Length: 340
Image (cartoon, rainbow, N blue to C red; front, side, top):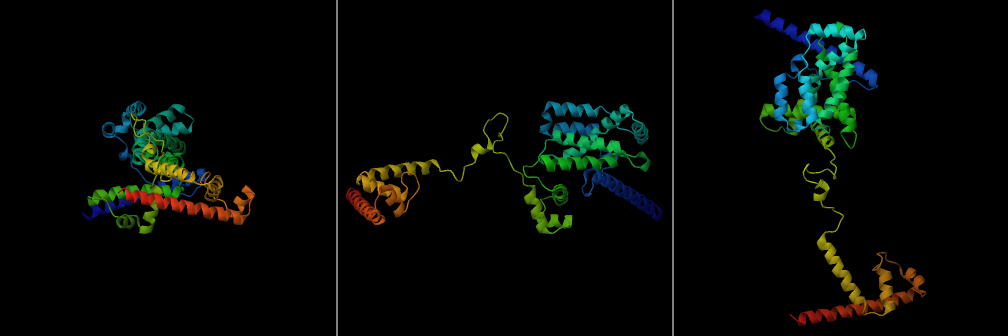
């Protein structure tokens, strides 16, 4: 029993060391090509590839796959058989010699690996078809740089390239406001951790629990949540059948409501009615002083310059006009109470 445990531990360490080696090699190659710092990789073993049955389940479980191009694409890649380790080595050698047919077969046989990774990023701003297309770019780069002499499976190496191509496409294209690459990786890790904890706990985890699982401070989780919020176009239709957009249902806080517009219209009418009881000069002075016509109030001096009279004379005319308006208001109020 002890020997069996030791054998398993040795095997586990060997796999772990291989994974770290693959991660380091792919990360350094990607960093050299893109002139960026290597980031955390996520290793997927060959067993994580989508099987034929899983592809069929994907058709049934995700309504978004109803689109003909995506459905046809997934059915097409399901027809390509997976490669054995021996076939990977043989094709990789032929690719190094410039065999384009070997390259096409190698890529086609690993397209379902791209789908298995891309489906994890649905809901991050790009459609599944767009995610697959970006992942295919990463797959092509992985095929070009794969070295069969290292001794590991191609899927283990290619996963890093596919994942990086997808996450950077999300950062570049999927958001109105571009996020730094490290924040995009943090958001991805946050979603993955949240899903895992929810499955383990049977409920949604708290920010503190997520922070502990990610080995970060709760304040960092708050930053990630804020960064993960997405901008939505107000012109976006609510559905394919309805032309109503999101903006049609959101009230403009700066715009006046119909009730406010009606009240303002009635007030303007009443003011115009009352001003008709003043002399033309009194009416003009009040309109200029309080901006009743153009919304631009003026000083005594400005009104005086416009009318060719002194500042003091403008003040006298204004005071007389206001006294008349107060008297009219008192009379109307008295008439109102008398009628009750």
